[in-house]
Amino acid sequence: GVQARGATVVVKGAPEAVLARCTAWQQARSVVPFGPEEARQVEDHVHRLARRGLRVLAVADADVAEGARLQDTGDLPDLVLRGFVALADPVRPSAVDAVATLQGAGVHLAMITGDHPSTAEAVAAELGMLNGGRVLTGADLEALDDDELDGVIADAAVFARVTPRQKVRIVEGYQRIGKAVAMTGDGANDAAAIRLADAGIALGGGGTDAARAAADVIVVDDRIETIVDAVIEGRAMWESVRGAVAILVGGNLGELGFTLAGTALGASAPLNPRQLLLVNLLTDMAPALAIALREPADRSPEALLHAGPDASLGLALTRDILVRAGATASGATGAWAFARLTGTPTRARTVGLVALVGTQLGQTVVAGGPSPMVLGATALSTAVLVAVVQTPGISQFFGCRPMGPVGWATAASAATAATAGSIVVPWAAERAGTAVIDGARRAGDATARTAHTVGTTVALPTMRRLWWWRSSSPDLADDPGSGPDVGTDPDPGG
Image 1 (cartoon, rainbow, N blue to C red):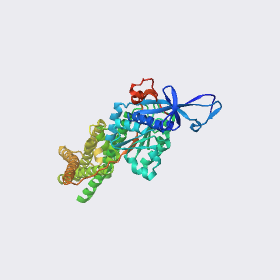
Image 2 (image 1 turned 30 degrees about the vertical axis):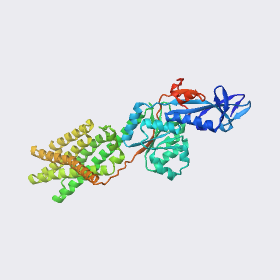
Image 3 (image 1 turned 135 degrees about the vertical axis):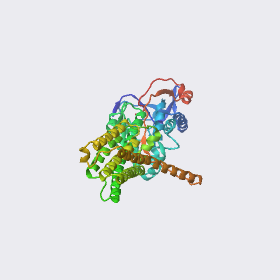
Image 4 (image 1 turned 90 degrees about the horizontal axis):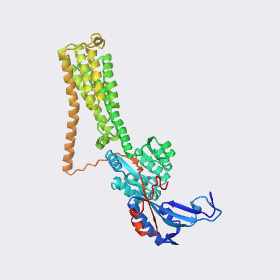
């Protein structure tokens, strides 16, 4: 405790907490009783200020006798309300753009704060985060059990006047309804929720050691735009996973399909084990690695939404695998069957091998776009294929034979046609599906679509303007902007 001898104790904090302990207030040069009617007047002022997005702190004091021991707030005597401090926390324009980008990428944003509900709601509206979402307070959370919280948490945009324990409960609630949660914060009271979240993000510039120690990621510049860059990298990872898996699984299924089709049409498998090993070396190593490591070509919100796990895996991945497998098998089988009718079995195997590799490399180029890494890996595999086939001795080792222009043209034509089919067939199927959906809509059939989202909380550290006015000055209370700008406080209220 603190041993006080004839001291004055000054208290600042949330208005509702401080006002509840006040029995008098400053009016002009005198102190007068502070009753329920006066409390309502003051609360009206606080609400008006909070609706402007100002963070309001009440300031009160009390004289304590010599020898008094103050262990906690429960030991405080009755307080005298002296005035308020209003902190303006202007939103950076770049933060508004970052919020819009995250929402466009399918990320659900929720603000968790200890501020007044009206302040939090005003700031969230300025950021574009409300979108009709609910504003829940710590008192609301206390009145809900876990099942009830799970039913309303997805519709909440703001959680105000919450405690550290309630922050943990909010993160747990999002996780219970199947969301992957990223939690940002910079204070010690955020540390538990940051540690519990699937991705804990600490704002490191002005953050506490506790928050940084609990986090998985530390944003050293305290900018939400940096979190957008992190989301881009994460979504790019999912896109890379999908591309690499489609290449590996789809290509191998296509090779299996070619083997089965060739065996059904002939007396033996069209490729020997060495040739199959060569195919895998040329199509699965450098090309698949290049797809996995390439930079995202499109960083727009729409592209990020498409690259997320819900959109890029599941049915989308299955479709890519089947398309790649079908194109690979059809291109190789067609080239091998044509060469088998016009040449020797060894020549047919060589043409089929080249078409099998060429079809997969062509689809890799389509999937990788203009990435220099993908183009370089494809060119390298193509050069190795040509060298193996056309070099005597090496060609015979793999059961091939050097080919002339007709053989190369046959394989290239089949590979080109199959690669083109892998582009046209999904496009035509998508157009046909769109036409069916449009027809159903015109007939009055509504189709509801829900997008899985990721829950995250946002902290926006910015410069704050500070006003002070006396509770007895109604002009200043009504218009804090007219008050003197006397200083800044980087961390009001803890």
